[in-house]
Image 1 (tube, rainbow, N blue to C red):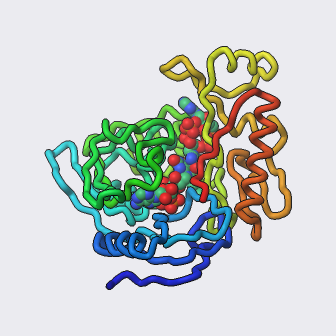
Image 2: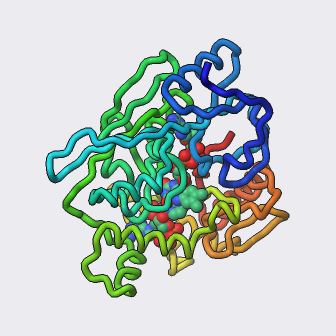
Length: 339
Ligand code: FAD
Ligand code: NAP
């Protein structure tokens, strides 16, 4: 037995909200064998298994009556290189941002817009992480997951993952698939995505007319550092709500009353509204109730000023949801995974 099981472990250091709940059992997986051992323990002792990575997309509302398994597997390898495209495979426990930096240092582009997203490689497919006009589906080359129902390994292609806006098969079939490693097809020739306003603007301000992928990464890191609270300083889970997709009719109705509405037309005819704009218009920006609050610079981010519980954060989120529904007839869906 190599798995080191601990009982009654505080998960405060293991979730970016810094919520203090306890795991009945806790262990870190450093290999596939550790993962299998945890699954066997869970089955033999009839204890549920909850897999986590960096804990940056979790809302923990109570003690967790489960074995919490934190993925800590490491390893990055080149699977193929045809001179222009390189397929890289990374273990689930690799930390996302250093992994992105590693790819850039190899002269590979594709992940630069996803710089500085917290968390692990293994969790990235869960909600098809996205930022500044790029989602991992755009560079995805497959993954290997363990089917927790059968214990078998399965390789997934892009089409099989059902990736959508902040969504995937793995999020839909919650608890079934344990992602072990993920593959990315990256380019030696850069195809940069600069269409998100602030990115091009930041590069222009820096006097960079012909950016490299590393320039784009650095610009995005500087924008994010200015706008988003650092979880090490102020607990948060990034965007707390997804940007709602509404009908063009509803978007037009809202715009009549609120001409400044921020919305982006989608290929399917719907309009993606900026949830942060709706929340700010409703007056929640900077709101604080005890230690649960709405960030003063970014209304989409709920924050924990210290001792907020998961339930207090959840109640605040529900108040915001009700208010937005009443004012705009728009349903906001929470993004973090609630346990
Ligand atoms: P966790 O929070 O540990 O887990 C998330 C979910 O995935 C849970 O349901 C967990 O059970 C499951 N899971 C974790 N690992 C595995 C695995 N190996 N196999 C199966 N299931 C697993 N997200 C974006 O999309 N774009 C952003 O720009 C962005 N910015 C953020 C900024 C900040 C400041 C913060 C705090 C969060 C941000 N996020 C963003 C959200 C978050 O960082 C991502 O969703 C990230 O991928 C979560 O990774 P994690 O390892 O922390 O996952
Ligand atoms: P922003 O630039 O202030 O823009 C507000 C919203 O409008 C964004 O959420 C974005 O939607 C949308 N948007 C902006 N420009 C767009 C364009 N050209 N085309 C289509 N949609 C556009 O956003 P921000 O809060 O500072 O975040 C910047 C990026 O980082 C966004 O992509 C955001 O999703 C990502 N981010 C995500 C999290 C998270 O936890 N999920 C946390 C922080 C930042 P999209 O969100 O759909 O891109």
